[in-house]
Image (cartoon, rainbow, N blue to C red; front, side, top):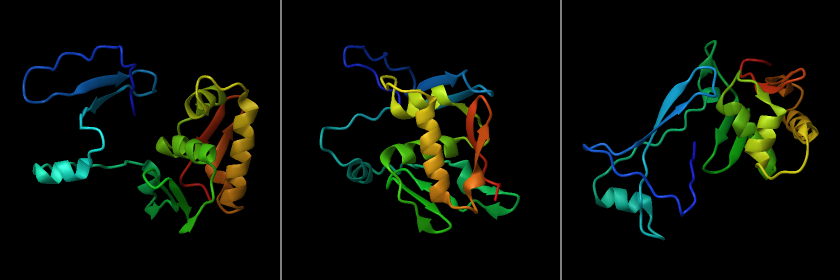
Length: 170
């Protein structure tokens, strides 16, 4: 999750102790969870990996996509690589538009969670988007076509609500 603030908003004072981090409790999810984020300030144009290596810092970056885990003993054939902005299904790269990728990444990020059309419009297209939930329906239909007949059932319609991604459906 990325949190951005306007430049005019003052940053909070550092917390005492050695750990300086921001705690965020999400209460909008069914199971309220606490997230811990760290803010790293670097000079403009600096390569973070070079700075970390020079200072002996070995950051661990993991993208925890439940779809990449195992369900019922079988790995999910859908792989999302957010850094390369690539989605692969059964080893073949899907040719996705920017919005299709964003929509798929949102659904895959929390499998089995039902997202309303309004939520998806707000978080994928942005709050200033002019349109309705039908825009989401069109993009979901395109994703299903690109998934093919074998995997189109992975994106499930929840009538009168929205959509969810289900990794174990074939």
